[in-house]
Image 1 (cartoon, rainbow, N blue to C red):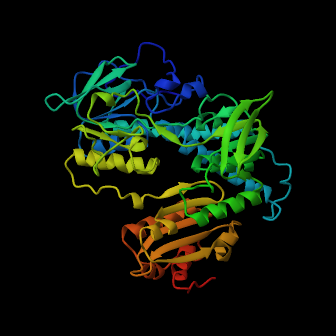
Image 2: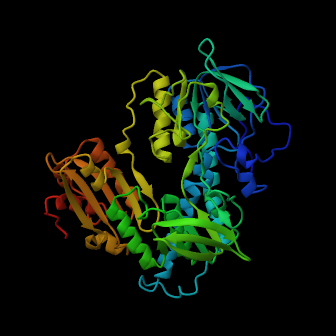
Image 3: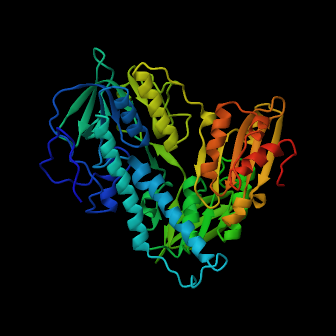
Length: 517
């Protein structure tokens, strides 16, 4: 596969070497996972002439590359700095994209297993080709990595190899970013955007390997495990639990809190737990993990529930207990940037306390660690740098999307949060069992729940668990952004038969007038 050299940039003279995991700019070390794989790596630049950029972006995940593209579109001279030989960060290479590719494979396999009901003959002997599944997943990643290379060239963004660090305050309005790992030692810019991403948190005393897994290792297993214990039931935990259960593994979830997906509405958590039990996914809540140790051919996890100690064994254990901001060793201590528990404090335009330095993505305090949130943060930052009008991000308008089976999509306040804020709440709820399209696609689990302000009717939050929830939630984001009422939503004609009709019925259910239930 031919490489795509950047215009006006010389090829590196030496061989490309994988970066150590601990030194990765955007938390990705793919050479360690796919040795010898070209992975659409850049032929990195060397010896660029001295340039003062309008903006230099450290890190090329969704927040960083989106900022770079928008900067180019706004006519800014932009550079993006990346340690790895490829752009895209955790999300593209060992996060969102490859995970969802596996989830699609799992969904198709589930449909095949139900082939008799669908009129498909001889499906009982269908087996999985894990190598082909992994190859398809990697092909999707490579395609979009190649697309990012094109977008950088299209928008005249200079891509610079190196590990970027802040060096302190600007001098005469110009910041210097120190570089390691490339030919250049530094670059200069009027503004800097810090977009260094996050890393998987690990339980104390553990290190990831072939049996104790994070999101990176679990994506590159040589074969499907017969059993896996998942510690944590956030998005990463429940998605991989869903994947490997579909692929035939025995799956157990251990959650420290009283319910799965604890950021979601309580009824959504309850429904997911019910469906997972029905699927045969074992689970424990209020579970405190005390010890993880290797056995002869697997891993043993000791945990306590309600004061009773238990021990489970499996081939693998996935640690999915959240992600830590990657703000160490990037020069923050040389600036006035304020940090709280490792997260960077910013104002509504993503400015830090250090003039001319912005922060976006997973490192930002008080905003969710979501790729789509980070991407919009990048747009806000560069638009502000360009001196153009820009609307700050409203945290309550950022959708959550979890791609387990059944899917979860939500935006705005949960019912409990709305009540805590003093609203008199009125709720409309509609089950997918009463939706004709859900019957057609054979996915009856779940519901749409709309939380409204009883006084004025304004929609405060929407919570979906069921088929295509991650797509359906977009309508709700628009509704909240437009400060729509349940009555207004109930007057919008939805096509029939569609899953989105359930939104129409849910809005009518606020008034006890759902048509189909």
